[in-house]
Length: 226
Image 1 (tube, helix red, strand yellow):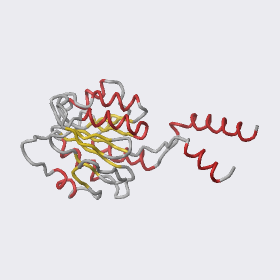
Image 2 (image 1 turned 120 degrees about the horizontal axis):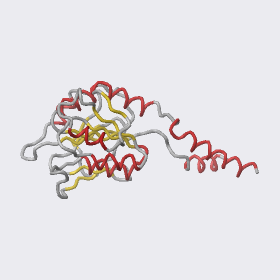
Image 3 (image 1 turned 90 degrees about the horizontal axis):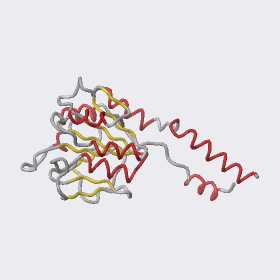
Image 4 (image 1 turned 120 degrees about the vertical axis):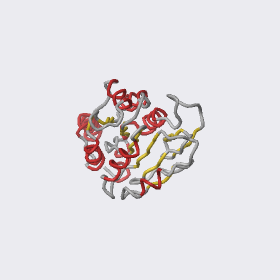
């Protein structure tokens, strides 16, 4: 097989690495998000987007605060930002944060969802549609049920969902709503979430798609040799 043919073949093989993480939280979220981000290594190879429910009446200093608590670069998300591995993008207060298929971010002032803007549902749904099996959603402490529909979307597109457990949640409403969908893959204490993210993203395991790969190569060998 020529190099050109090999490149064409490889371009058709799905990438099993999960490369985009979306974290959502509400009440108690700053502390929880800080703990997760502070425990991630400086070479964490996935982009991270964050929605935290905040009052839109005051300027948020969340990006500045988090940048002091993690080795990863943190910035407030801006329209058109391109997702980069190892970077953290914080949703702007009063604007929905959306992930586009081309790897850029959009900010939206469409109506509130679940009485909040930014909403976890909007972020999760856009990420699921844009990055499918490369998406990981993390639902942390918070009241009510924001993120429920987004969790379903993430799973329906082949992604992975993590929810904080009740014992370590300041408020269990958001994680419980996610768990009640039956779509959550991991229910974890807060201190175990960062290590789980690292394992999912950095090992780039292909075990989940092993049968898909095997079938692909069987078809490929049949076409090449027969």
